[in-house]
Image 1 (cartoon, rainbow, N blue to C red):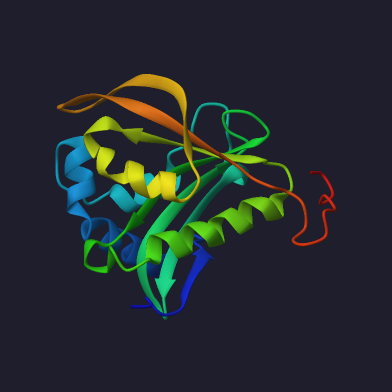
Image 2 (cartoon, rainbow, N blue to C red; image 1 turned 30 degrees about the vertical axis):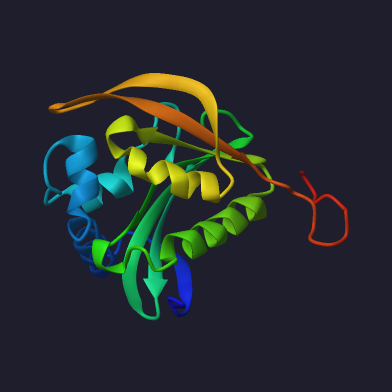
Length: 184
């Protein structure tokens, strides 16, 4: 069954967007439980919007709403140029549990991938999977991600685990031309 039209929209932090983002996060309690050991908290939308890795600025942070029609059903967080200039870091790709297993995450990722290609500065996307949430590994592999071999300790509250790093190379050539995009 087709999930219908899926779009992504860059969020600007407006009050209505933040309320929708918080609702989506709260509609995915299994993820929060697996990676933090607790249910979603009341400030998770704000945290998603504001947390930055060391050395990055908000010019390189992009939080997207994932929409099915006019309803936000998921969210994503991308950092441009992290951990190096040629890498985009996917910090979060989350779909509300009632909208999971409908192809929305896959469609949204392809839109995010096109967005990253449009920056013309990143030739790969990197992400990490907390081992307690290893059920997403087949999904990532299906999108073309491969493990990098890097495993890092992970601790959040009562969750002590490891995070496994994955990476996907991006082809920056224009479709069907064999020509590389400027900056690629």
